[in-house]
Length: 225
Image (tube, rainbow, N blue to C red):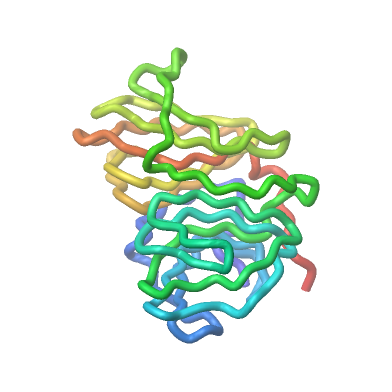
């Protein structure tokens, strides 16, 4: 299966317009944003857990990165409420589920195996600092690696923001709205931009909070079939 697998092309997605696709586990559905592979895949998705649903224990052979968007995600290590950002490196394992139900944004098979830092961050309380190079933008680094840079950014109301990276970028809107080329994007919409390209955005009247990953779209690999 291939979904938005042409990484040299921009992808701008209103995620609420994507159909939910059932997973192999009852009560767990997915909106597939990009994907290379079948059930084991390099994938970016929004995943919805119904109340009381879960997956069996599994190992992250390609690593896992996710943001809890709604509800409370749970595993044997603890509870992760909405606004939690988690990185589970290659080789980690858990039993994921949610007693109350939850929705997460998740990326699979996109870790460098040498990157073994496991972490979780509360984005609700994370402090951002003004970016001296960009008016109306404040940011906080979540992960700085040779192969990628991940950050949380807060854009002031009506701020005009240009984004570019030699390795491409993607963003997920956590709060507020932004516009690009006359099109408005809202909470949980997702945008991916190819390497060496530049995109211009304007924050809405309420501003915006966005999760951004940069530099990771030039060396795309997927699990072997």
